Length: 262
Image (cartoon, rainbow, N blue to C red):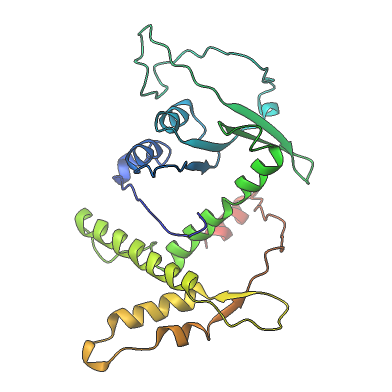
C-alpha cells in the first residue's frame, strides 16, 4: 500500500457485479512471497465469514471494519460462538445442509473515536504485536486506497471509455491501470531537491499523468523529453496533519434532492 500501485484487478459483468464477492478470487490468486505476510484492509461490507476464511486459508491476515456492537444491541462475549450457515449466506468451505464444521479464530476490537462514537475492527492479527492503538493507525492508512481510487477515476480517466464491446472496454481498463502505475512510479522515484522549507514536497500526480501522456504519444522522430527535469518543476507540499470534518449531505425535501443531481 505504501507503493500506491495496483497489483491486481478483477472485472465483472455489469449485471453480475459484486465487489464484496470479488474479494475471494483476488485473495486466492495473489502469489505468496516467502517470509512475508499480507494484511487485507477493507471497509464495512467486506467483513464476512467467507472473506475471513479465504484469507486464513492462504495463511494471511485481515483487518475489516464492522458495524458497531450497539447498532443491534448485541454484546460480543469472549469464547466460542457457533454460527449456522444458512442458505442465503455464501461460505465456500462448508456446504449448506452438511454436518461439516469450520473453525476460525479472530478478535473484535472496539475503539472510541475523537467524536465520541465507536468503531469496531475485526482482525486475526496478534494482539501482542498489534494492540488497539496500532490497529487504529493501520486502518487509517486505508485512506491511501481511497486516494488511489480518486486518482484512477478522475485523473487517469476510468469513469468513461471509448469502446462499446466488453473485450475492448477491458483493454481500456488495463491500459488505464498501467498508466496509473507508470505515473505513480515516476512520482515515487522523483526526489525533489531538499531546501529550507516549511513542508516536504512531492511531485504532483495530476501533472505527472499529463506529462506521461505527452511522452507516450511523442513520435520517435521528434526525440525524447527530459521527464525528470519536468517533474521537478511540478511540486506540491505534503500536509499530513490536516484534518477536515466529514461533509454529509442531508437531503430532506424533493427540491434539495433534485438540485443535487442538477
